Image (cartoon, rainbow, N blue to C red; front, top):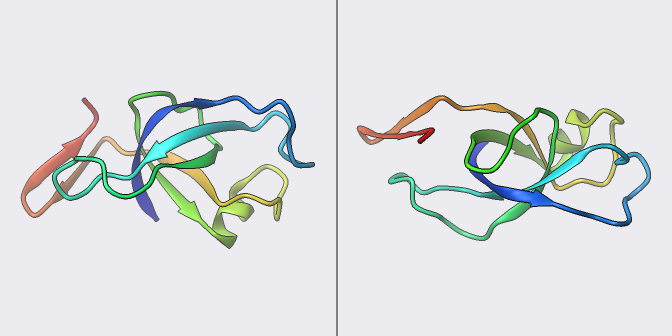
Amino acid sequence: MYLARVLGRVVATRRYPGLEGVALQWLQPPDEAGAPRGKALVACATISSGPGDLVHFVDGREGALACPRTFVAVEAAILGFVEEAVARGRRIGAD
């Protein structure tokens, strides 16, 4: 399970079978200080999250299991909101 901030929504005109109606969102994982870390990624949203939200997500096989139709071809899936996270005494939370 990983943390990320939702940067925005992704619009796809064509979708893999089984992903119809599933929202796609652009995520940016933070470092321990809350600054962007690594590459951004696209994830399926299994909750109603939106730009600016701090969320937790899973990747790989667990991401495929979290979607409404299991074992579709996805890299990651958002599972829930994070109200606050603390790393090395510093707060990383929803603004």
